[in-house]
Image (cartoon, rainbow, N blue to C red; front, top):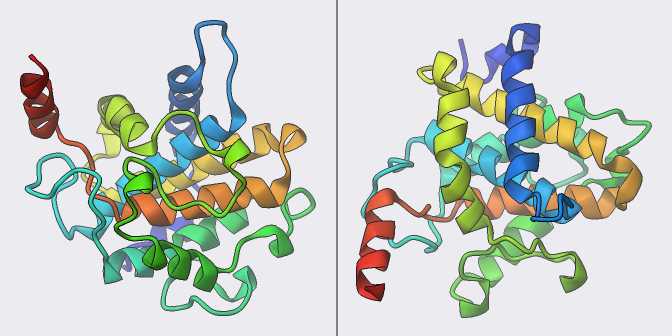
Length: 233
């Protein structure tokens, strides 16, 4: 059985976990007045997908590693999980058992059309071209207009939600492929919920670029956060 074979089977049993992840995302990005910045919700859900991609790829431990948080970490395995071995052509060429492929299958094509997905070659090349840009620290390189940048840094939302995500996925934590699939499906549910208030191409571009960028970014760890706090005392 391949890593993503479970994607081809009914997953209704995971509906409560997906619902809990969606609720966690909306709770995490809701401001004191109860408002939700749509771009923050999409970015947060995509960042959770990226963290589960890191976990499934296994290049380094998600929760306790020696890398500098925020540094870029290129990963062949992450690329394979994101789009299989395909980066050229439209989204219809991407394997259905990849992250982008599963996202496409979970979205209503009458709402989010194939033409509105970003081209993976452009996503990958833009990320590579901006590696090392200090302006991107804590964020991911985005091609969308800055008016649509998330307010909350992805590196921060990843750290802030990780314990909650771990808790929600604890019943299936040993199955990293399943955890990743649930995260993708939760992102799809959020994209569906916000479809009436955001341009669809913009939403998909933000989601896919965030997944790619954060899947190749060293996460903040508890140990690194303690060191940061000690330097501030």
